Image (cartoon, rainbow, N blue to C red; front, side, top):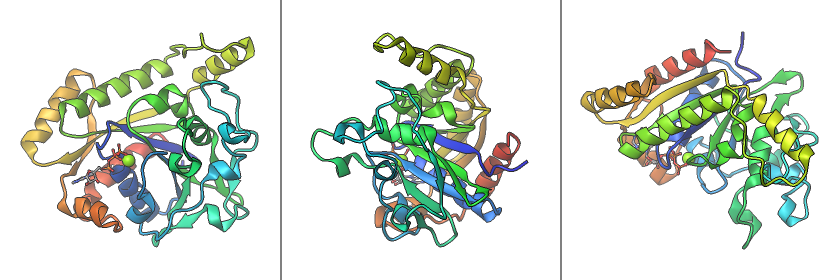
Length: 291
Ligand SMILES: Nc1ncnc2c1ncn2[C@@H]1O[C@H](COP(=O)(O)OP(=O)(O)OP(=O)(O)O)[C@@H](O)[C@H]1O
Ligand SMILES: [Mg+2]
């Protein structure tokens, strides 16, 4: 079995280390020979391209796929209209080069869209979430493993972004809020997977409500992996593991607190992998066991 063709997302509290974990995971997967693409689906954050060693960010896919509904385009917010994007399969061979960028190690970067690109009043990024929910990527006949960098918290999850993910990485930093958010996210994803119905009372058309329920019922998520992030020492690690264990969660690995990673984000440099290879090898094999 291969992970090519799978969709994997990182979720967690704001600043927990989601983007860092995602970039390190992408590098480890690419190193193993997978066809890796990242969709930057965090509409509020900048800098993913620099962390991958790419000088400038690609243009937003939301424009390629029909534009935001708020600007007269066809891509609507999944909360108002859960219907699927018409043609969400992107072939990298035909996607115009302005919409894709490639890192020095061969990771393809795509971007859903940034709220700042859409001007004053474009306060809802639901359409970008729908792009993430529906997107599939291939290059000719070769499927790509798609990694998703979401913005912090639960909002994208409640908009249905996670229904199409095969695996989810819950990133947890050493703080009460980090632990609590990781526990809550895991509970939300588990209840979604076991058939909890989404809120549909606001939807006026019965067909829309039915579609939303059906999409949530089809939630794919085969595996949830927990990763500890920014871990400074073994005492902190043991405490975090103990707290997660009380909630029935086991962490796969710990990314150490690393001045080199912090410095790379600060200076807009490609993230170094030193000191994180073992943790990422553990995460890769956990993902591979659910391929
Ligand atoms: N392992 C680490 N060691 C040291 N510092 C780290 C580590 N991981 C992340 N950081 C620091 O924490 C900051 C936030 O990390 P990151 O952007 O990965 O978090 P995030 O969860 O994606 O945040 P957001 O919610 O804003 O998207 C980084 O800018 C970096 O300074
Ligand atoms: Mg981030």
